[in-house]
Amino acid sequence: MANVVVVGAQWGDEGKGKIVDWLSDRADVVVRFQGGHNAGHTLVVDGVTYKLSLLPSGVVRGKLSIIGNGVVVDPHALISEIERLKGQGVDITPDTLKVADNATLILSLHGELDALREGSNEGTRIGTTKRGIGPAYEDKVGRRAIRLRDLANLSTLRPKIERLLSHHNALRRGFGLPEFTVDAIYDELASAAPKVLPYLDATWEILDERRRAGDRILFEGAQGALLDVDHGTYPFVTSSNTVAGQAATGSGLGPKAVGYVLGIAKAYTTRVGEGPFPTELTDEVGRRLGERGHEFGTVTGRPRRCGWLDAVALRQTARTSGIDGIALTKLDVLDGLPEIRVCVGYELDGKRISRLPASQGAQARIEPIYETVEGWSGTTAGARSWAQLPAQAIKFVRRIEELIECPIALVSTSPERADTILVADPFED
Image (cartoon, rainbow, N blue to C red; front, side, top):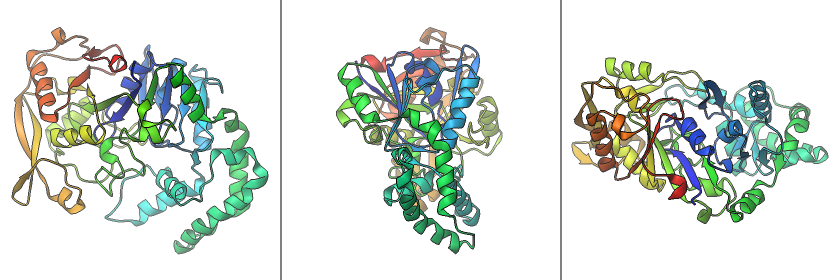
């Protein structure tokens, strides 16, 4: 039995929530390994919709759920999300939810800095959720962050806050803003401590014990591989590594603990925020994809940019994440289109290329080269077997496999978890 890593294979919003929920029913442990409460995973269970940002999807299924050290945690957002889900009848206790004691915390000053930068960077905005994710990661690598374990001994917290503020107050002076006081940050953290500390644990040790016991571990990624800080469309990326390799680093398990890598990709492409998007459609087809796919951000509510499937970028992320199989989602959104286009290459300065270039300038100049595929008039919505799909839909899926050089392991045909066609079982790989 393989442990499974689930990663987004595009720019996020690929439908990971449903797939992770579908897999978590058969997992013993679910662990988040990167990102923060900027993630947005929507689960529909028995007709009830759950929206998760920070918590692993396994909490809805009562599975042991772990927020790993690679995640940056806003303690107040965590408390709020726990209370909201409890209000929906989800039982969350320190026995079912564990948070890494060495996880970096997001503070109010991080959110303010995030918003200040986005507001002042006219023309070069990244399109962040302004929730302080990036600034928190900066403090982590700058070795000045406050970590969850620090809340367990409040008497030692003030010197750590002073170290943090020596950096942040210098930035605030540059913006012409009043400085933060040690007392204000101390009070912010002290007020959250009693509610979050019960969930604190050495999660790497728990995961190692469960792995040795033969439990199935599901690693849940956030965002998408094209937003990876190294391998994405830099600088229009998130502030963490979103590729599958981060599952080991962000959970505290070695790379041998990672078995099958499942990439999630839509049958078309979407993006939220700024940055290059070679196959973006601003015409009626693009609007149709957005309306039929209900393409609005789970966290921000922002409308997503929509376009044709980019097989070049998808093939590249399959390689940088070591993806073993793709879960293709939202196939039903393409129902009724007379023809479907797929990007099979790029033209850059008059030359054809077969990869997404690393240069920001080159990414802005590339033009998509399309292949046209015949559409289908029948419906794929709710299909649970190949026999229920129109012949042209099957041909489309098979053509994607050829173009991205990676097999399709699952096909999702609606938000309902049961509306899934299983081709290859990740847990039994």
